[in-house]
Length: 228
Image (tube, rainbow, N blue to C red; front, side, top):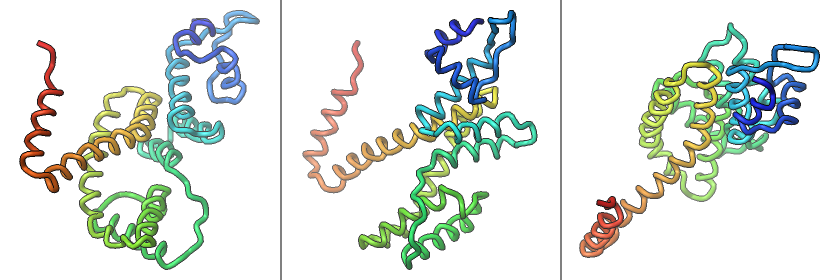
């Protein structure tokens, strides 16, 4: 296909495609004449991955180049490629000033990883983000939240299993990385929304009277009906 067709199929403007080629993110097309090049499905898949990393993952061009270099390196394992991609979409908090709460939280995170037998790096961006969250909880008087950390870890293992099972449906490595990035970023929103819904349900069952709970159930059943 010509670049115009590639643009129509992907929704990426021609000038942007040319920019990606100049930056080395997208391979150049196969020359069919001095002024014309041909593109194929591999270019379409790569463009979709670039847009996922940029629009969904929020990565800069340099970070996208790192992910694509890992994807294109035949010596890099799938596990390593996915690690590079997911580490880059984890929020960074900069260099935090060391304090007692953060030191304790980092220790708790390392102990959690060891206790659960996770093959994860205790110094990874995700581990640091978890430690930062635990330290923040300690500072506002909710250090006891660490007591429910394993319950959260149980849920996280199930979510990760579902994430990877979904991603495994994709055949190509570009598609696999795109799926993991999109699933990680948007999956966080899905998970947070489901949590809010479950909290609303649990709160109603715990604190509402039985009559109010029954009234809620009736409304939910009514809203959940499908047209006949």
